[in-house]
Image 1 (cartoon, one colour):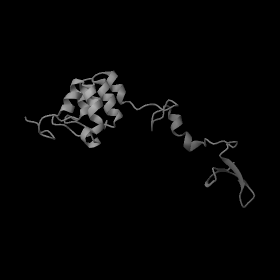
Image 2 (cartoon, rainbow, N blue to C red):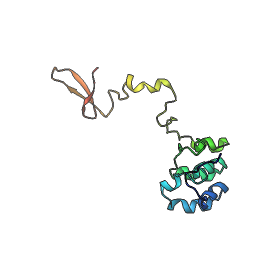
Image 3 (cartoon, rainbow, N blue to C red):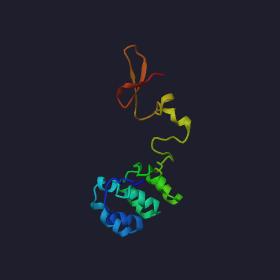
Image 4 (cartoon, helix red, strand yellow):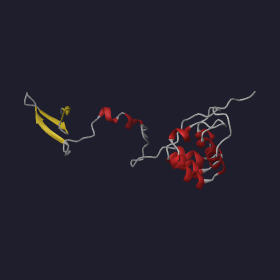
Length: 154
């Protein structure tokens, strides 16, 4: 069975550089490329990030990710660049960085943290962003940052 490739023809020098680990060539050429260029499927059916991941080119994978290569694009075989990696050294490059509190973007480490914002308010009464006002019934209301739509009734 003959496969049909997205872009018939030969692969370019950048593809060979990613496959063979020519980091200097990739560093020199990448800034002149558009996002569309370095994210498109090449004649072999994979992106540059796929081939660098598959051939274990750590420096090139890191550089491509830093320049915004799409991590989730599927190649001709239905694999992401992460799936193409053989080693943990390459796979760890695809992990999202943790924030200063040790969490990942949109992911909580503890299920109790997930619902914390809906069950309690993080601002305390003695917070500098909290103002106490009186409503029309002479009841005390704590207002946050002058936003009358977001108040604490204690």
